[in-house]
Length: 127
Image (spheres, rainbow, N blue to C red):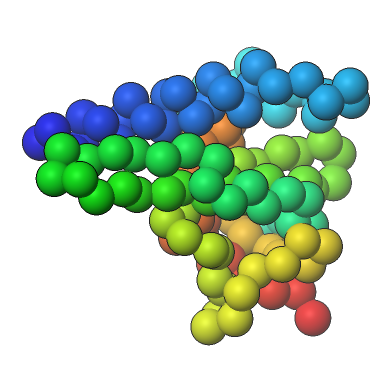
């Protein structure tokens, strides 16, 4: 239970750290006035824009550490999805690299800021 609680707090902190960071050219706002209940999922093609290794670390009470990698996917029309995973991101048994095109089912606006990489529906490389 405590690890789950720490994980939720870690995700919130990770989201706040990523959203407060200023690079001079902030990505467009991906929030939508449409509620999650009315959202219809669509398949999108996006490019891996950033892979931030060790973007956040969870220090567990037994002394172990979990490092979370943050992957930013930039799609057409300013769609920005941030996904996270433990360690380096893999897709179809090969590492995910910056500049690669991927397709997936676009999550609801509420989930786009922080979603586990494995929960992106039908995530696959675009050839």
